[in-house]
Image 1 (cartoon, rainbow, N blue to C red):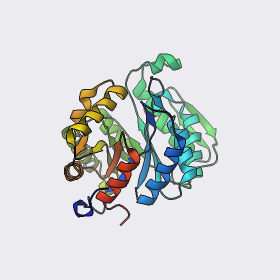
Image 2: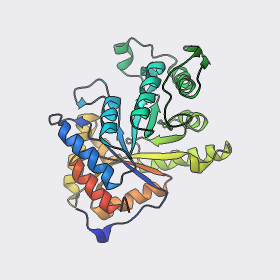
Image 3: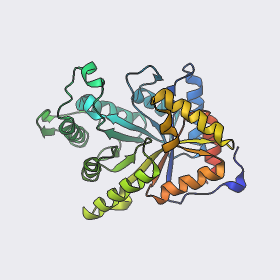
Length: 316
């Protein structure tokens, strides 16, 4: 447990979420440990619990919306988010139905992260064209919003058309659950400001990159006369709190090597080391523009959840 005298808060308006154990590179899937983690994280005062999407690969990764539904049944107050679904790989009509169902089952606690993704082996595997991914993404967002917002959805695009169709039940949250976009390209940032309720900085981006991107988002919001307080700026933070800094970095590099196939990325984008150092770095990310932190420990997850909650004085 992290000492109370080293604890601090990041600010009254900063929301702190944490990733649900979902990726199991070295061990068996243990649903009991996931159940214990989810229940404990809610009691500790985390704002939100998060999952991510990876379909193909030799690392064991649970499907995100199934896991989020499981978490919804185990909790009652904590927000439940996915960061992010690669929208062009999904049929937006089916996805809208699943999202509305989860928002109903959780009684209005869903946060939807959507991303464009890159050109991957998923497209031929799913029988989908890689062309026009941006257009499919934008139209997919339009389809989802139309189905979730209106009783008789109308939408006409290049790839999708809705002609007065209904989808029920509607989500609890109105007009729809918060939609946050991922992405780092300037065009992705512009799309987020134009179409989304928030933007999520990638876990694979450095603090310097995030600071630049968050600044761009804020300038775009101001130019669009959008309310900065109503738009969330989030950052996924891979983190390892350990007074033995060399051990923390080594374990992060092992995980990044297994999951991302790039051990060096860990040293460039992660936060690790003593409690005091990790706190200082999280404060730096907040100063760079984050209003929401998605903490992502990749080992000893329950211990990290406990220690970080004490360190950040969550729930107080």
